[in-house]
Image 1: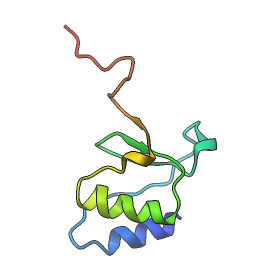
Image 2: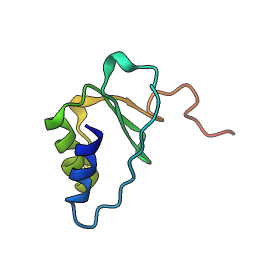
Image 3: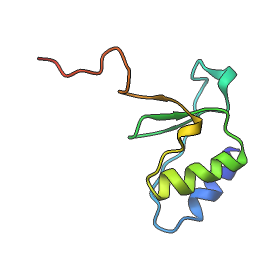
Image 4: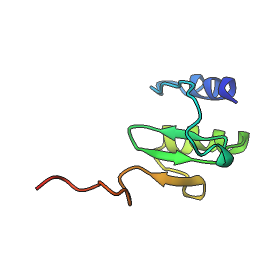
Length: 84
């Protein structure tokens, strides 16, 4: 799936996105996992159809795929407030 992600990103003219492999995010049973930064959006249960939607709808058009988000950094996190 990592190769396919590269192909999808490369096919989008002008899209600036970096992809890297990482070790387990400790939520492997929800995998495959994909995280989009700087948005801090964590997607789970990624298949090829979802991967294509994420590239075209989220990365290109700026619309996250709500049905596959299981975590959004800063939304509901314990330490998401600014120091006073």
